[in-house]
Structures are given as C-alpha cells and as structure tokens.
Image 1: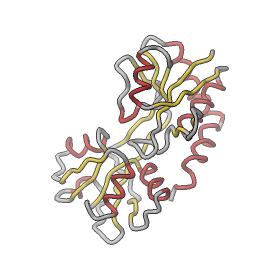
Image 2: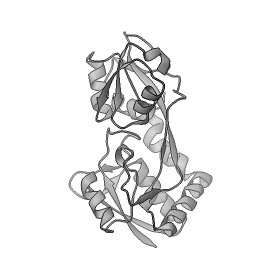
Image 3: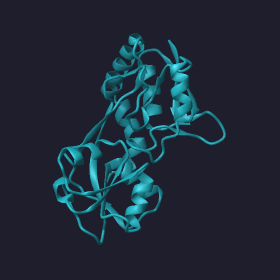
Image 4: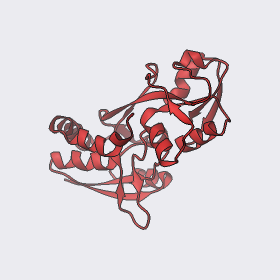
Length: 231
C-alpha cells in the first residue's frame, strides 16, 4: 500500500518536541514521529509519503481525503473524522524550575505559585482536577513557557520532560532545570491519526508499531532524537 500523510511543523509545541519538523525550502519532513511512521510502514510492506503544511491546511486536506493520516495531532486536536492508533510513545511530565528559585517536586507543592503550563495540555487538566491552588498561566509552546520562566515571569513550569529538555538545549537556557521526579498524575500517550472508516490503515499501523517495538527500530529512532538530551 502507499499512503499520503500530512506533517505540520511542531517544533517547540505541546507534546513530543520536534515531532514533525518541516525542513525549510521544501516539503521534505523529518522528526521523531515522521521517522517512526516511516519505519512502521516499512515493517508492514507499505510506503508513506509526507506532505508539509500548516495544521489548518492539513486538517482541511484530511477532511477532503487528500491525506490519509497525521503523525501526531497538534494540541491533542484530532479532526472529528479521525481515530487514533494504539499509543507508540508515552510522555513523562516534569516540573521545571529556576536553579536559584523554589524547587517543588510534585503537583501538590505548586499551591500559591505562578505556574506555566501548555495550552490544552493534560497538565492543565490535572492541576484543575486536583484543585491545586496555583496561579495558572498558559503558553502556546514549550519555548515560550520556558523563556518566560527563565525571565522570572513564573515560579515553575509543567510540561513533558523531553520537550522541555530539548528547548533548554536548543535555546541555550542556562538557569533552568527539570526536577528528576516524574509527575505520576500526568501522562500523555502519542498515537498516529487516521480516518475513522480506514480500519485497514489503522490495523496496519498498529501492527507496525508492535513490529518496531519488537525489532529494535523504535529504540534506535528514539535514541536518535531524544537520547542525547536525557539527563
């Protein structure tokens, strides 16, 4: 089989960092979820073609059946006509703090503090669900959140650990750190999105996800994109 998949630029946005990075000057795309989907397709005898565009453009093309799937819905917003595969990755969350500031290690320790979280992210829902009395501030992307934290606009930030660590590295932010303890109350599963009626493609991708976990491709791709920033 041969399918077309839309890939929007997601560098620094909610969730897995650089999940799909559109290279400048063309439609060629790369990134963790892109390379993972390529590997998944290979294990089930398929070929995946990617086309770059904005999220709004890709949602429209998905609705018009010009693309068959999406590597990762942005901000958790899959189109209404979409369904998800089984998860391929689960994000661990962490609290980011200034090195010279308070060092809360759990959500219940955020009470009374200025906390930046990512818009429409599971961390926001968890803070509200647990009724943590924090002063919640929303950011559109991880880079914005951590730059504001570094500048002293907040006391801490809550986001996926790898997303935050990559921003610290890529933006050369020196005065922040991630608490080592994972936040057990927050997690996020990452999946591929396909049309609800395309059960054949969903089944193939689910099988491919199991294949890359079994043959070592998943760990190799994960190490390529995220291993160098694990601390």
